[in-house]
Image 1 (cartoon, helix red, strand yellow):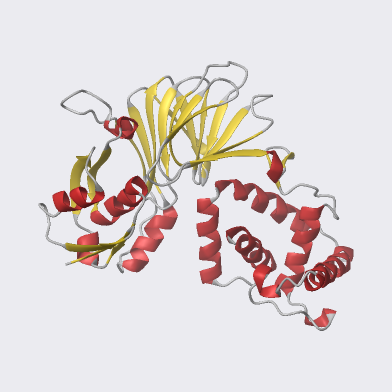
Image 2 (cartoon, rainbow, N blue to C red; image 1 turned 135 degrees about the vertical axis):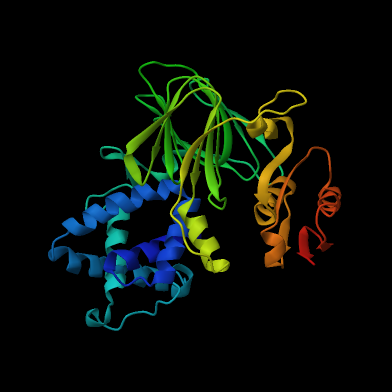
Length: 362
């Protein structure tokens, strides 16, 4: 359903008929699915290039598409929720026509032929993408075709094309991953996230890029990496071992400012030293690899999101004052109930659990 919504919202954006709320929804979907950014870039360019003759062809194809849906007894609302069968061409709104053009693009009628493109016109069809994902509450290890190894944290997703390693090694990450990359001098390794790209040759590092989190983090353990921010492509940052790049997520900051009636401040970028555990000198940023959930000076709202992924539960936090309380701590073998009881030692709250849903209040 999210992909169908993406095409509807993109159609409205291209036609200039998207509301502010719809543009926010589109931004949120792109944050959750960074690979869709390729579609927007290329379809946006092609949209500007289309001639008036394409309008008629697009409308004809769109009418045929709706006719086929009717023959197959598919309700119009299943694919286009607000859409009723148009009576005549003159009644087709601009975004309907935009949707028609997108149909032509994705079916190849106007020569687009593929769903997504990236780089210099290189196409990626959906069925040519390998996708590995981990459910909430679980972690997994992946060996890529070149021998590089990736460990995925809970609720994470890694995708790469079947062309991986032929000329370049490229993956897209949503969530958190620990990378041990094999060095191949003429084939750089690139990781795409929602707001940064990371380029390496061979190194060990951790990337935390959950779209729902306040910030994206890149922690370098060994080697060297080059980080490029999507909104500042000319500003490249080189990290040295034991350094961490922290980039605040614009979508989170806007949402937080609106929720708590705060003044919006643009995202910041900082380079910090990695943190080490005093007891065993392990890197705090990668302790999830040792099955430890660690949080350092985070708000209770941020900790709740981490706990949802870690324990595979849904937590509803019903108090805004509690949500902004900051804490530091870690959990290793504790159950979700034990973890919540431990948090109650630092602040006062109550909780009720039904199945995998937990409600927290004062």
